[in-house]
Image (spheres, helix red, strand yellow):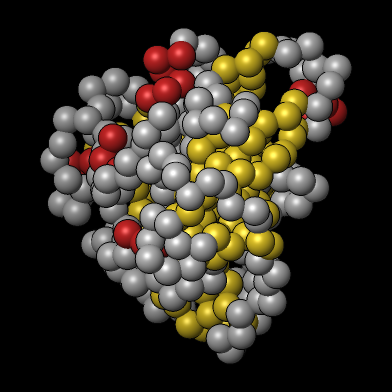
Length: 321
C-alpha cells in the first residue's frame, strides 16, 4: 500500500487555525473565566465555511487570533483560551487533550483539574475554553493540544476506519521556554531499517504484519496482549528524530513499556517497531478506539508555518471486545 503525504492534510477535517496568546501567557485565568459558547459568526477570525472544524488559541478578550507558537516566561504555569468552531451543518462532539513533553498532563478548566475536556457544539457554534497548565519545569517544554472530533465513534465499518488515516486528530504544537532553553536529555533509539525498496511512507502507519496492510479493526477476547506493528518512514534527505505516543480510548498507553517512544531514522528509509497493548487495558466490553501519533523532531523550535513539525495521527483502529 502506498500512502503519500500531502499538506495541509488536516483540511480533511477543516481549517485548523494556529493562533496566539500574549507573550509568556501574562493574562492569567481568574475566577470569572469559564467556558463560553456563542455563534461563530460573531467572531471574524473564524472562517466562513460549510464543513470542518477551526481551532486554536485566542486572546483572553476574544478579540483576535494569535499566530505565535513560541513563548518565553519565568513562571511554572501557562494559561490561555482555546477556541473551537463547528463549521458543519450538524452537531459535533469534541474532546480536547493536553500534553506536556508528549505526556498527558492535568489542566484546569472551569475551576476543575482534569485530564481531558468533552464538549458538544451545534452547527456554526463556537466555544472558548480558558485553561491553565500548572507544574511546568524550567527549560524547553513542548505543549501539545489535541482536538478530536467525534471521539467515541463505535463504527467498525472498514471504510470509515480507513478514512481516519492522518485526519481524525487536529494537533496544535507550541514551545514553552521557562527561565532557560535547556532541552531535556533524550535518548533516541535506533531501529533496524527495512529493505531499501519500500513503499512511500512519511510518518507512522499501523499494521499487523511487516507489510503495509492497514490495521483497521480487530475482534479480541481480551485474554491476551494485543500485538501490532508501527511502521515509521522518512522520505527526507536528512536523518530524522521522532517521538511516538499511543492513545487507547484517549488515555495514553505505553509503547513497549514507554509512554513516549523516541527513535531516529536515516533518510529515505523505513523502520518497523513491534509493540502491544496490555490485555489489562482491554478488559472492558464494547468498542475501543486506538491510535498512534507521530511527532517529528521533538523539542524543535516551532514557527508559525512549519509543515515539517506537523504531528501526524495513524488510523483510528476499532477494537471490538
